[in-house]
Amino acid sequence: MNGRRVFLALLVVDWILGIPGVGLETRTYSSDVMNAVYGIVSLAVLVALVLTWRGRRFAAPVSLAVGAAAVILAVLDIFGLSGAEPAPAAMIVVDLAGIAIGAGIVWTALQVRKAVALPS
Image 1 (cartoon, rainbow, N blue to C red):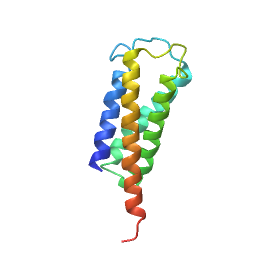
Image 2: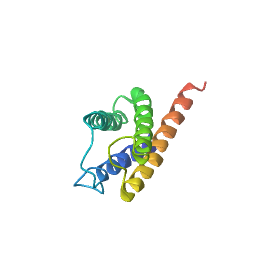
Image 3: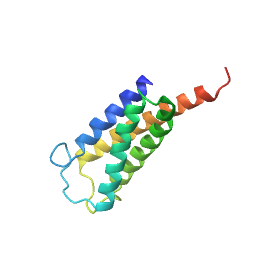
Image 4: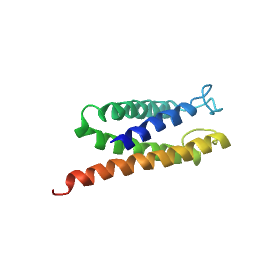
């Protein structure tokens, strides 16, 4: 559970680096659809983080969805499918970190689900 908290907190930091004017992001244009998607997934990251302390039963499934979404969004950004402009070099580094962090979240969520599913 603690490992998942670390990965979720790292994802929050990684996404802060991707905010234009705050982090390394230099692109200013983004579609309204992608803004909504990032808003929903960002809220889900915070919900997953809170669920690691409260509502542990739902923490693994929500974390699994958040990790998968983080990987998908980062891959879309790297290949230029999430906006009109290609990602600058600094954002590619942030996106690669997002892929690694998202994979870590998925891995920790699956480990907990396996541990719960195994008979004791």
